Amino acid sequence: MASVKRKGILERLDAGEVIIGDGGYTMQLERRGYVKAGHWTPEAAVEHPEAVIQLHREFLRAGADVMQTYTFYSSDDKLDLSGNAPNVTCQQINEAACDIARAVANEGGALVLAGVSQTPVYKDRSSEAVVKAVVKQQLDVFLRKDVDFLIAEYFANVEEAVWAVEVLVTSGKPVASTLCIAPTGDHVGVSPQECAVRLVKAGAQIVGVNCHVDPTQCLRTVRLMKEGLDAAGLTAHLMIQPLGFHCPDAAAEGYIGLPEFPFALESRVVNRWDVHRYAREAYAAGIRYIGGCCGFEAYHIRALAEELAPERGILPPASTKHGLWGSALEGSSKPYVKARASRAHWEALKPASGRPLCPSLSIPDA
Ligand code: CBH
Ligand code: ZN
Image (cartoon, rainbow, N blue to C red):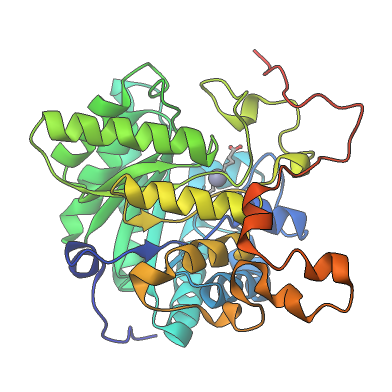
């Protein structure tokens, strides 16, 4: 399907626009019954395109400016380990995912962002050639499908991310890269400052973090990345797509180390008011590409779009059904509910968890 001519991502970011990203696909689709938990591979793009289309539409309607292809963990080595090969191949998934993302993007003027992620073939320095071959194979499909820009996302080691970026930039398309790291740095301890410098030197124009930790910790990490870039005299656009789960107790490996991962994270879900605060802080930190990862649902994306509506000058279609800042509750026939029709109520609220015998924090597994 042909792409409709619209302003590119760099043109928009260079002009100072705020870009709202989309939310988490694989974790949400697991909950809906389309993904193998533990493997998190995206064969649903081929097996259940209607489920992927629906989720894209929800994010689009909530205000997302970008549709990220559902190609997370789609490399053939990963499909092999997850028992998908030879029935579904990386090429099939990527083709289907690009077509789906483009079709939905065209329904609302969004851009298509195609992604590659960390691969099981990555071991150490010696795996550079094989990692690059895996990325190149995916890039070929993305170019045939003429996606708008590219991302190397969810890399725990900046070394592997740099290799992916080096391959993606050969396309001439804009390249973003987000690491799944905490403020402590990448898997082998490279600081966020240094990670950002390496990604930008490799050619990424947009850098930041996604997944693994909550909005607060992701903000901390991106601020450190910016510090590193400033000190090195480099410039890049900043991107953030945190978890939609509170996990101040997560260690370096993020929420994956928490005993609640992945089937009992619900008590940690951020609410829409948390997202308002996160959006405001991200904007204040100079981050202009603001989205979410696992746990981020459509109503969270809508909250991003609503908080940043003054800057963007638009509200998403999903906002038409409810008033801003709780004002829809004016319509309630119950006086005690009507009394909550105010921004002050929701901003001051300390929501109860309703689980009297539960701790508020966990001890991460080693
Ligand atoms: O699906 C998506 O939204 C992707 N853009 C990012 C997924 S991050 C998935 C983290 C779980 C991975 C694991 O446990 O190995
Ligand atoms: Zn994630």
